[in-house]
Length: 378
Image (tube, rainbow, N blue to C red):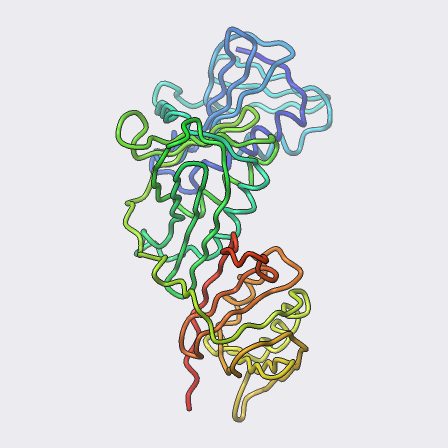
C-alpha cells in the first residue's frame, strides 16, 4: 500500500478523524486510525470506539490499494508538524513510512484484522445548511448537563416534524430550545433522537467545510435504529443515541410575563463579568430592574462587593432577581444578538432570555434560553 497526497489536505483529514479516537481506549487497537486506499484512487481514513465513528474520504494524486492501522494520535501529531510539501506514505512489512521533503518517520502498524468494522449509515433523512446547524447546536448544547450519572440530561433532544427541527437541552438549572428549518427527503418525516451533547456539538462545529450537512436517521425501527449519522464534504460520522427519555420541557416555558427588559448584549456581558469578580462560586449576581435601569450587585456583608448600573428599556412591574452568573453569561453568549431581552414572571420563577425584540406578529423566537433564578434570602 502507498499513496501521495498534499500535506495540508492530509493533516486536516487526520486531525478531523482523530477527534473520535478515545483518550483511554478499552483495548489498544481502538487507539488506531485505519487508512485504506481503494481501487478508484481514494484514501479513506477512519476511527471508531464503538460509540462514535468518523470517516473522511480524499482524492489521491497517486496510490496503490491496501489498508493499514497506525496510532491515530501519533499520526495526527506527525502530519501537523510536516513541512508544506507532498506527503508519501508507504507500508513496508510491519511498518509504515511517512516521507515529506527531508522529513521521514517510521510508524509501527497495528493488527488491522482486530479493528472493528464501522457501522453503516442510517437512511438519509434530509439536509440543512451547515452554518445554520452549527450555530443552532452551539446555542442549545451550552445547556446540556455535564454529570454522566444523569445521562438523559447530557444529551440534546432532536425532534423532527416535517420541515421543522427542534433542539432542546437542560441540566435542570437552565433550558435551551432552538427551532430551525431543514429540507427533509420526505415531507411528512417525523422522528425523535437523543444525541450525546458533547459529541453533537463537536460534530456540528467540524462539518462547516461543506455548504450542507446531511442527517441520516431512522424514523421508526429498521436500519440504523439507535444511531444517527451526519455527513458533509467527504466527511461522515455516526454516534449511538441515548435513551429518548427527556423532561416535558415545553410545559416549563412560560407564555405570559409581568415584565421585560431590553439590554445591549455586549454592555450587559461586560457588566456581569465585572460584578461577578467578587462573587463566590455558589453566590449569585443580583439584578434589580426599575425605571430605565438595572442595578447589578454581587458580594455581601464583610466580603468584597461590586455594584454597577446599566440603562435598559424596561416595561412592567419592578423586579429583584438573582442568577448564577456563569449560566447567565453562557446564555448571553448564545443568543447571537446585539440586544438581549429578559422576560420575567416573578423573582422566584424562571426567566426567559432571547435575542432582540420580538417580531411584530408576536411569534415565538427561534431561540429561547430559560434560566432558573436563585432565591434571595429575605
